[in-house]
Image 1 (cartoon, rainbow, N blue to C red):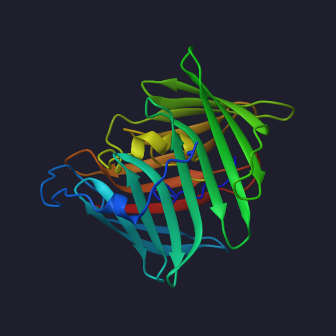
Image 2 (spheres, one colour; image 1 turned 180 degrees about the vertical axis):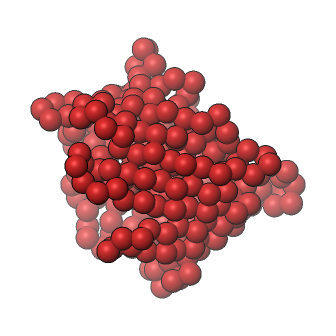
Amino acid sequence: MKKALFSLSAIALFAFVSCSSDDNATTTDPAATTDVLVKKIVRSQEDPEGFNEIINYTYNGNKLLEGNYLDGTKEKYYYTGDLITKIEYLFEGQVEAQDLFVYDASGRLTECRMQDLDDDSEEKELFVYNNDNTITQTYIQGRPNNTATTGQVSTLTLENDEIVKIAYNGVGGKTYKYSYDTKNSPFKNVTGYAKIAYAFHGDFELEGKKHNIASIKNETDNFNYTVNTMQYNSDDYPTRVVSDAIFNRGSAVETLTVQYFY
């Protein structure tokens, strides 16, 4: 599975809907919401290439405005109505990467472009919604704003509006089965988050649309790809997740620890 670029879950989706900085100038009163919102995440990994990072989130009501890292990196979120249409990733004030999201008339994600502006590269995902509770996803790599429509195809199977299986088509394709807890995703109440939850699949996957991912099994090779062990607060939101992953059969377990603060 490819690494996710999405920092909400990294914790993982875009025809482009026009957005500008004015889209965040909503009149929502930040104090008006009583929903639970994650305010800070601490992520750490202990291995030869390990890391520690802290992300502080700010909101306008339930709309996510920014994610701020201690090293000065910033994620900036843009909305059109209640849909997230762009995420910018800035360092020292410069936009180095961005994710662009496009939706159909029903508000379903149809295209996602993850653009690395420094490397002049793009990962694009196209989504087609089928009548049998599946989504056909096409993954394409190339230059920013490329018009290609063919690439690696996978089938996402949904159950209770969550992904329960991803089958990568073609020679050597793998099938992954997802299971969930019955608790609340930390981003459950963030406006627009559920709409883009299908777009990002990475090495460590923790959150679904409403619930949390308990495990991911590589059914093709018959081993547990990811097992997430969670602790919760009294409102049934996760406060700590230890994610143990084996990315290839026979390889060592890699562990990511994530703490959530509300």
